[in-house]
Length: 85
Image (cartoon, rainbow, N blue to C red):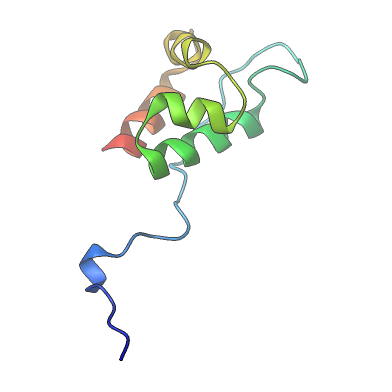
């Protein structure tokens, strides 16, 4: 007979991205687009690791931290904290 872990120990299949306003940047297809920012926050909420989340969206960890500190990035930083909290 199959046994399943209690509901409290199961991991969510879909992680919800906290609401945020993307950091305004110049348009670059290989940069931190609003989609990359949202995907990063989702991966961060899932993995709880900045390095792994940045790798999943094919961006550098250092640029994620730079984006977090950037002017206009307050909402992104708050969503980052919510994803880890």
